[in-house]
Amino acid sequence: MIYTILLSVVIAATAANVIKDPVQGYKEGDRFFYFPGDGDNIVHLVDTLEPVDEAFLRSYGRSPNDNEYWLFTRANPTNAQVIQPYNIDSLFQSNFDGSKPTKFIAHGWNGRGSNPMNLHLTQAFLEDGDVNVIVLDWHRLANRNYITARNGVPGAGRGLGQFINWLASLGVSYDSMHLVGFSLGAHLVGNAGRETGSKVRRITALDPAGPLWENNRDRLVKTDAQYVEVIHTNTVFLGFHDPCGDADFYPNGGRIMPGCWTNNCSHGRAVDYMVASIRHNRFLANECRTMTNVQRNLCTGAVFLMGNSDLHKNGSGIFRVNTGRNYPF
Image (cartoon, rainbow, N blue to C red; front, top):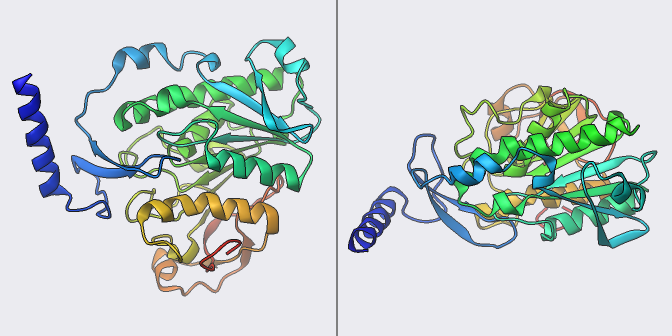
């Protein structure tokens, strides 16, 4: 007991010396960093040496049944129908219609299926079109410590990919599928797409998590789907900095978003921009020749829309769009 208390004091003191306040960013190799929970509005101190729950990880991620799949349609826009993988009755007795496009949504760390981001994206997608929306609830893993959750993301992604493959085996087209993931969930949907052999039509990654992903082979890459789009909104602190999709958007330069006073706010702006783009589809971004031009607002290339719900969207390059401070931006 005494040893545990002393160790906690030492860690807290070390963290105080390494990170002065919650706005200081993470640099690859740092032991400590701050990271926000998805939906809890709390910034957590993360120790990269904290113990990983290996026993939990060994049992988790072996099957799509380790996650939950909540279906929303225009017939049930607010009350989820839970689909059980490989249980055809649960699918056929639901409102799922395989002839319609399907949108998959994956939350981030410390999140769950009932998060505001899932509710807002679901509502926007259903208002925009007659689609299936499947919210992935992976809270059993997401609510472990950050290191355990990060290590388990590939397995959770494979589970989602196996679920998608099951739907495809029943005649649902990969070309009708659009995966959207936020923060850790962005890397998760990348792994899901990879599990399908990169057959899914589109992935939209919303400010993919940056800490401990720079040299991670399981991170999101542009070959994870037929088309991969990334919206970067907090590259200096919480999000992944480098381009990692076919098209990478850096609104307002990608660092701090207008109307935000915290990194947590800027990180979450990627979700807000996606919601606004589904409803209004007016984020006209210019292609940039270099990342320096992104930062200096010197992008004058071809115009390309950021976000939206278009399943047939295609494009490549790095882009910048300048937004307003308040919704719809």
